[in-house]
Length: 154
Image (cartoon, rainbow, N blue to C red; front, side):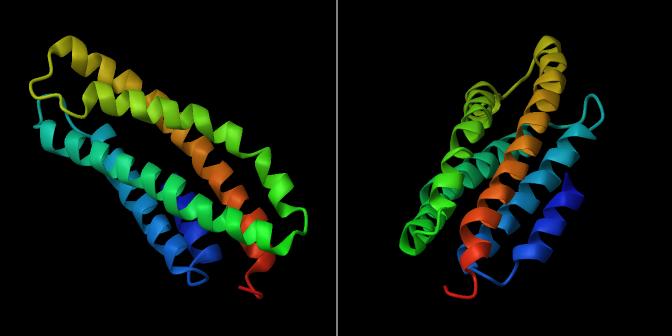
């Protein structure tokens, strides 16, 4: 997942400051996610889990309220069919948004996790990781469809 994020930064870095910032947020999110998965049992979890949830919500918000809007605006300005192609991608992103919001609701303010919650956290992190990986691929398709087609004109 981290390698794919680096690839995305290499492909689209420098084209748009909003996209650059968003891809940096993605890389931070992945780094904290990987560190969470690698934590030993009994290690202090609260601060890193809370940090991850904050980063996750920031990443989702940036995507929905900044990046997607910019990409859609570009697609509508050029009226070259890219907007229509992108419309098929957006509904596929929603399940990972729902999974992320559920994860945040469940773990964002968890202060003293029980053993049962810690066991469930491992499973939930795994499921969330799969959802995020699919999301990142779909978002990369959006950037490719809506931004790269117009990068020389923007």
